[in-house]
Length: 141
Length: 111
Image 1 (cartoon, chains in turn green, yellow):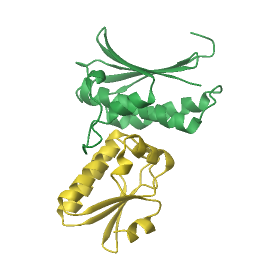
Image 2 (cartoon, helix red, strand yellow):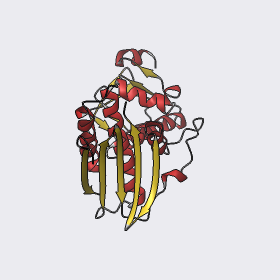
Image 3 (cartoon, chains in turn purple, green):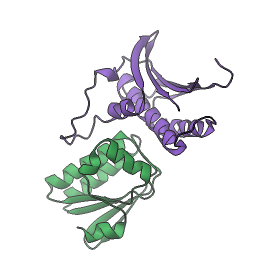
Image 4 (tube, chains in turn yellow, purple):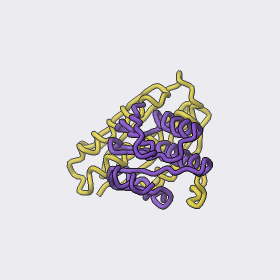
């Protein structure tokens, strides 16, 4: 890893009560990026949001709301690129299989994946040993 | 979740006293709006002044309340959105669905 890279590795129980903790860590990281020249408040909100949405997908779908499972999150900032990886050890939930929301229909659900894809430059989901990882990257100006 | 509920000019005002409206707590707001409409209340205003962060589940709870309002011939309107929260409505095109007012007073005049 390059000298000025940041890597934060977090594991929390598979419960929504930890969303605010993870979101807050994401916001604090955004505020530490000394080289970032864009709107820092918006970046902080976006990191919080992507972490929240990805973690909810892991908790509710990939890990099927099992409170004894764990969600593992890794946030890396290196070479002006932010990468968020959310690992699950469940049966998986490929967010790339989710169609975009129909804006004409008023549905309660189905906006989370759209939000992640709107904010991040690349989103992929792949199988790894013992589970899956949702890998999302964004270039930082 | 912390909700303060007041009645003003026959409008129920729900003040969401939380910094986050997300997958952890938005179910409570959804149930509360459903309960009020089922009780026969017609007009609900949700004041989001204290909400700094909303996710897709928070938006979903408000959409659910909006649909509940329609099915009970009622109204659900929103007031005092912080900038980042408002941008979430724009990203998901929900600003075209909800009537959003800059202040509670203005919203109350428009029921």
